[in-house]
Length: 116
Image 1 (cartoon, rainbow, N blue to C red):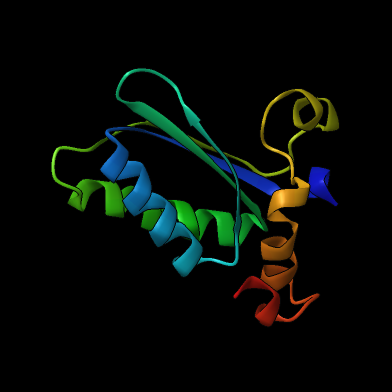
Image 2 (image 1 turned 120 degrees about the horizontal axis):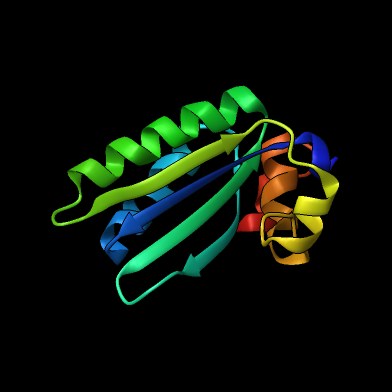
């Protein structure tokens, strides 16, 4: 399944921007945050997975949220509809055990009570 899920990656300048984006993305689309990376002294990257349409919706919400965060800017972003398995194996964009409960909740395969 992971190689079939789309991936969206958003890089921001400023932590408030990535925080606002992360919150907006998971509220706007049925996506799972699979990773967060501090890229530099003030740059942050967040990666999400889900269906192509949900990732597109979530990314749009995340980009909009960054624009509303004081001092934050979108540095770059990309959506890959079906990343190759080799890409998932090497880059930090695959589902991990830590995010599995959230993935299951998004996909409707478990109860949301496990997240509380």
